[in-house]
Image 1 (spheres, rainbow, N blue to C red):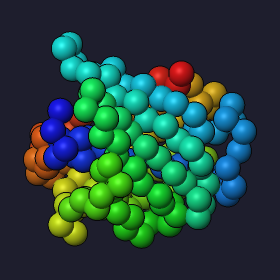
Image 2: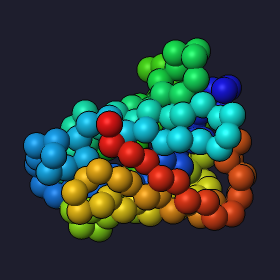
Image 3: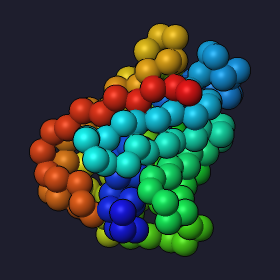
Image 4: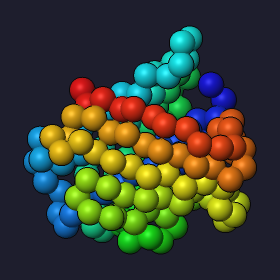
Length: 154
C-alpha cells in the first residue's frame, strides 16, 4: 500500500477520537490495539491508541509490510493536528472533537481543505468501534461517499 493511500486511510480512521478528561484504564477506555479487517484480499489495518484524553491523545496506524506507520498527537479540542507518516509531515491534518465518552467527530483535511467527516462510536464495553465516513471527494485512495468500518479490540 502506497504512502498516500496509508495517509488517506489514516485520516479517515482518525475521525473517532473520543474520551473524557484524562486517560483511563484500558478496559474503561479506547487505549489498546484495534484491528480493522479490510475487504477480501486487503491487508488488515492496526490502530494503537497509546493515550486517550483531552490534551493527550496519541494514535498510530499501520497496514501492509513496508513498515510505514501513520501517527497523530491530538488535543481533542477541534484544532488541526498534523498527520505524520514514518515521522515525516504529510499534506493531511485532522481536527477531532469529543462528543462524549464513546463518540467523537473528526474533520479530515488535505492541504487544509476539508475532504471528509468521520463519526466514531465505541461500544459501551470498548470492545468494538464503528466508524462512519462521509468523504466529500476522493482523497489519497479513499473514495468519495459514505463507508462504514468495524474495528475490534485485541
